[in-house]
Amino acid sequence: MQFTMFSTPWCGYCHRLKGQLHREGISFDEVDIEQDPDSAETVARVNNGNQTVPTVLFVDGTALTNPSLAQIKAKIGA
Image 1 (cartoon, helix red, strand yellow):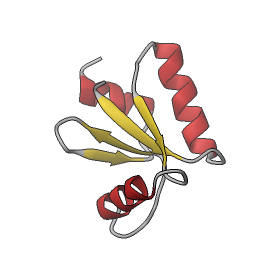
Image 2 (tube, rainbow, N blue to C red):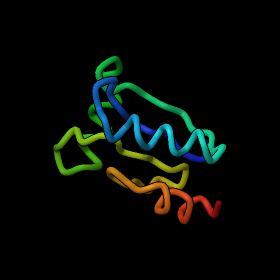
Image 3 (cartoon, helix red, strand yellow):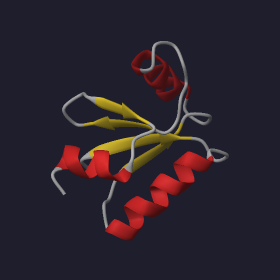
Image 4 (cartoon, rainbow, N blue to C red):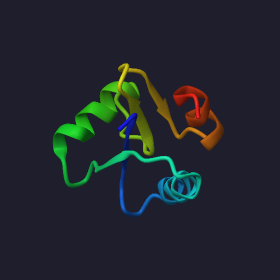
């Protein structure tokens, strides 16, 4: 996978972005930060202490918080 999306089940922005990614055929790993405390810490570290979702972490170590589909596509070269 080119990136991991950190999300929660109740996050409307997460649902929207996941739907857009699926429609574009872009695969990704997904982690529910409510079920994985270590991932919640990762998200907080990336977002200055906030557990903001969706947070997308790329294999190069960079991250985007609440990104648009266009931002992700630009990052992965899709």
